[in-house]
Image 1 (cartoon, rainbow, N blue to C red):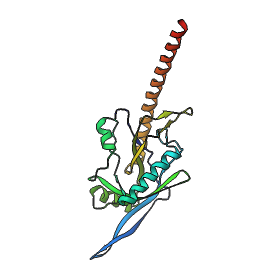
Image 2 (image 1 turned 180 degrees about the vertical axis):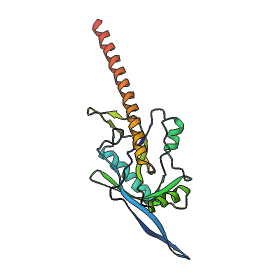
Image 3 (image 1 turned 45 degrees about the vertical axis):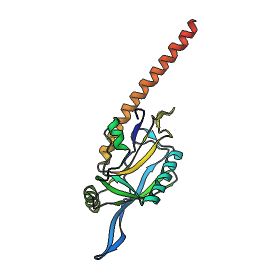
Image 4 (image 1 turned 180 degrees about the horizontal axis):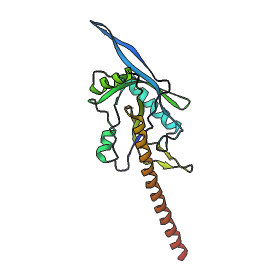
Length: 218
């Protein structure tokens, strides 16, 4: 897992944020209602806050995989904020699973149209984080939505952005409690990644120069 990177996307805040109270069942007291949020979850072929780009083919493939998982299991749990402080072995293990103890939503619907992923998520008010999230949403607060996944090293494009590789696998969509701070962290990670890639590319160029210089001398 040493060459694996945890990928997190820009936290999107729906311009026309909406939520509904949907009836999901009934008990002795009457209808059981659940808070459902919906909106734009992710975009393909567009740089996010850390200069990464998810291709339309990649994002479409992963969206279809998640759609099948939703059909099979009734939804995909998501947490309140990402468990992604870094890219250590421990961090990557946390990134590839969703903790049922801290899950706040159940992603119940995804679809992709014109390079945009739209989704719906049911708030799990029976959980501590879900109950807190529901309270803020009913108070008209707008959460951010951000995907997380794992994959190999991104590729530096000629246009100066990082292309997410095709071996990327999406895990889930999480709710981000502070989108502004989340996106600021992404910007910091972008600076670190670019510095790493620039150093790596310079090292390769120097090695190639030394190799061909050695050949010329022979």
